[in-house]
Length: 272
Image (cartoon, rainbow, N blue to C red):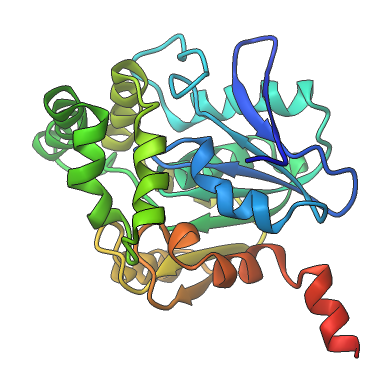
């Protein structure tokens, strides 16, 4: 994140901002076991090209928690709206990964005028329409693991499942992100995952939606992404080969091509 500055909103949300004044604006929402820092490869590749904003979700890293311990995706969306307005972002591409995809869907349903394009990756669809027993299990599972193992132990145990390419440098990124987890923020996000559903938000979104997934993702498997597309005609699916759940860490070039399009350097090469 050497090209970027960690900023804080008046309401206490921390976010990375690369401060680029040209290109398009992209707002990046991380998943449940993560944080803003895990987008480091995208901040490196887009330096000088596009403006990137990546928040620590409420209760994560340097961000204050939500007022509610039992939040919906709309609660996270309203928190993001305060950041968007304070930073005067105008319209932007909203990119949500995993649980961030659920938050992004809520945001696009509530504030469609802000979102020029919606990109969802490795979508965590939520368990809001499953049994009470399953919801309780989902709610308790991750916080219990964090309390038992601590952030570093959790990174060692969970990291290899999140990555298709668990290289030392990729594992280091995951470990650094997990070290900034707090039990309160993680527990609130687990409540969201357990009791909300993306199916409460997607019907209100009428614009095209790009859904990206890793072909080797064991957390939100390809079959789940295909089922999502069958329910919503506005979804276009994009597979990323040799990528697991954290596809933007595993295969940053393929991910960046799908999200940001050609880099300026790539355009120059094509013109010669």
